[in-house]
Image 1: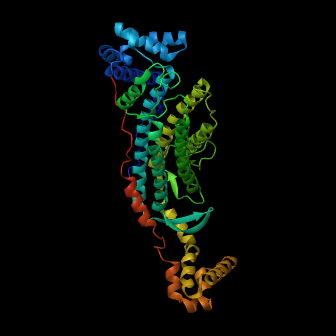
Image 2 (image 1 turned 180 degrees about the vertical axis):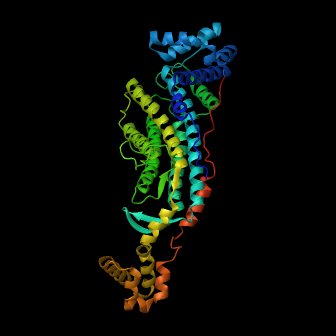
Image 3 (image 1 turned 90 degrees about the horizontal axis):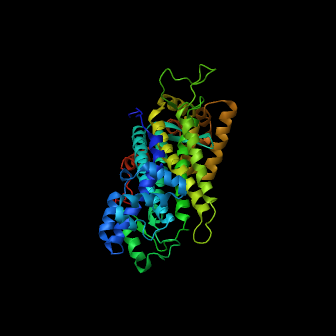
Length: 455
């Protein structure tokens, strides 16, 4: 397994989705789609529509002038439309025809979120491919399975990893499943009833949706915030999945267990005062990021419902929340990838911990074998009492079993030894691990195609 961590600009890339330039260009994409749609049905001259679409890119605008106008007017979309109109000369009279600010902002945000989705799925694919290699490589690596932090039954490390693959695939399913609701164009004018667009409003909306790779909405109003709230909650589920993995690594790294570690270079310092310590680094960062991401789901549910047909306060709260959550989700998945890449399973320690508890972890198998003759209840009580006796007297369980007349008469000493020391007492762990490794190695597909560029 390749454990090299590539140098990335993940933090910069994630934040750039919501930079001024990114948002402005998304608004220009919407203005272009609007003009082309209106030109197509004759609402504005086709020549003007073509000119507007051709100029609807930041390279055509005077960015200094745009910033100046935004500062003066405190109306970013108005300022942008004015700058676009200026470079379109006489055709500029048709820029932003019949639209309102929130139409442009909301639609532009969907264009940006479409790009966010692509990045999220890319990161999810990268993580799943790493986990798939790990699951396959360790499908038969026996280790202690634990419930309530107590030794339970033998499993394999690959089986544990398979559970992480399964959960991340469910997260991907949730992100995919929300897209038809999230990526709905709501372009209906000032209050969502096409007042300024008239009877052609619905047609324009459908044409724009097609050009931008979005779905049409039944009611194109400005107050349907539930898809955005749902989306933030779905993103917070990435934090839930990453927390599970990071917390598991953190526990397995404890000195008493020591079944995994972070593969650091010799010059990495674990503690400033205790030279013997090598504290986890990546896992700690991942846990903190995942916990922070999880809180965004709760924050989404506290966003107040918008009043009447439009509410700038709610819009601002949602905008800020989305612009905080999306980069955090992207970066958390990147941190998960980098953490998995540096994790080193300690198979020797896994075997040592397994050998130390293998007798006790075989008692379920012992009980079920006895149950075919004694009945499950009687077998359970008998094995429970013998296990307690072995622990109290600090005697090997095998010796206690061989001294019990009922067990010897029912099974015999050879059968007892086989049950207690059977290496493959792992159920279907290997089968499950290999199956999930295969599933995780297949690249995830998004339901919604990337939005087309209109200029």
